[in-house]
Length: 406
Image 1: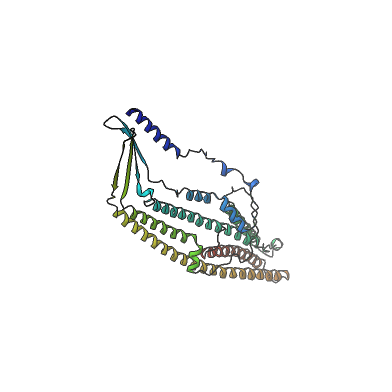
Image 2: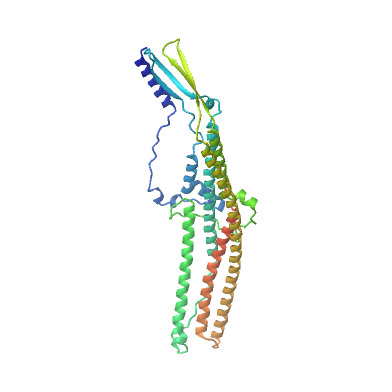
């Protein structure tokens, strides 16, 4: 075999070996109209809060993207390349040669450290998914407590008929104007309740990964839900995915340091060769000595210390957030009790004023003002009820609730 033929054979072998491990491109077109289509026909009856969270984990596009990002971390990084060569020697004989890292073949190279680093990075990306999933669960819980709170609000009896007094000349026309203003104030309060209910439903279907027009049926949650656990450092570390993600980031930094340290070590390169002559073998051994890698090690050590400090900072932030959220929830609970007392007092004053008006000893204007106070108290009760419900959910979330389904 002449040298030119040997070169052609070598090139053909390299092309064949290189093509064996290649993955093919798979087309997947983007359908931008998909999230715009009405989802009412496929909307689920998710039942309970836990079922709604499970459905969101499976269908929310934010979480699907984070799962894909986690899978995009390659935990099987490329192995040390095998280099091939083909040519002719001075006697015009064809020859083939390869170059391979002997330590890598024995499992003593950098690959085990690269695999460990890739696994740490995937774990960090997975915990970013869990952190977002807990946030989605919180959004669902807030939507449900808003719906429950609004459903528990009643319409007060605020209407006062003063037209007869004005027509009889017993009261000025301003009393009728004030009564009409009270009616408009109640219409505004109804609009606020509708807006809050609409906002909650939109937040719910968005958390579930459904279009705004979807109809979703979820069981009403009970009063005083969810329970707010007493926060402790151990419970926060065990349940809060944001802290766990910081811990995973520390593990990633530690794996990067280990890899940087390993890359300081020399590599042994074997270069066996074969000439197109049955009796001729040749080869060489090379030693690869890395230089200037100590700076990378020092940088990786600093990055690990930064990650360690960020873990401590995350735990302290979580403890502060849990304490603040619990204190604010306690304050909203007191504000809600005060709002209920205000509604009771305003209703009692209106009833007393009506009674005096019936026995001709009261004032129509006084009764209108009492009715206006009832409407104002109802608006205050709505605001206090929603704030207490949301603050309860936030306090529970800050303390580590809920645990995600496995």
